[in-house]
Image 1: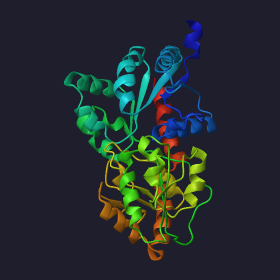
Image 2 (image 1 turned 30 degrees about the vertical axis):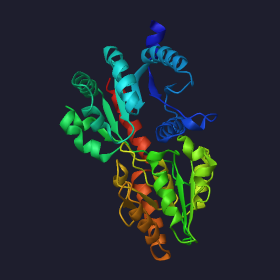
Image 3 (image 1 turned 90 degrees about the horizontal axis):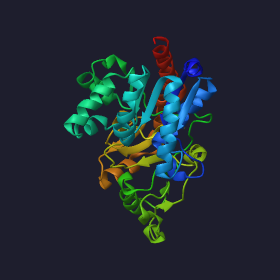
Length: 355
């Protein structure tokens, strides 16, 4: 027991990490988790991590989490949950009480921008318990500004709520040259990302426009060669995380016509901005908080193919370089992970010292 008490000094970080051998584990939440861990390593923060995607086998994954959590909770002062919807209402909901009983400080970090609606849709008893658990947390990190604005309505200590947006490391090479009418989609290949709409719009664009798509195949229909056969848009396969920046540099504009209602801050949007690549995206979820209309990108309504076509055609040699420069400036002000991660780490350090 004395040895365990002597070792209680670390930060326990819980969350899903992408795996090189499984490209389907790459997504906004896993990439952001890796970004935070990389920052902690670079700045020598002492922590231990529980990877909630350790195994493809759910039973093995559960056993791994259980044993890792028991050890981690006894050897850590602060427990940081990095969770999406499922993790918030299962993993955090059922394990946070143990943290509080042992006097551990809890940091709750929710990915995505649909949390309040998810909370409202819970059964009454679970909703009340969830709010009670969150009110005991030392820090609440939310991805969107909307959630920060709504915090006083739910939480007794709204001053504990921090804006912790999706973020990325700044790219070394930035800036753009001429507008060459090259548009790219980089995300999961599934229908709710608006792929059908983008492919339909590509067919009616002028001949000198290029539309390419990259991403892991989630919906089987996009893996069928017949889907893209005879269409102007082209699918170019899956990208490794480290290849995304170089791929974005080959295109002028990123297009994400998603109609997924729980969109938070898609990481690929800020990766594009960091390279001076303007964005065309839909007015849904947290995306409107990322786009200054006509400056770093354009917004269209979900499912609006006419609006998507008009937005693509509205970008020209005359306005492109202005939008590109503004994209870089907006990224630096809002989504530079070196700045954002430092703020959160400083807040957690204060929490630990105030034990």
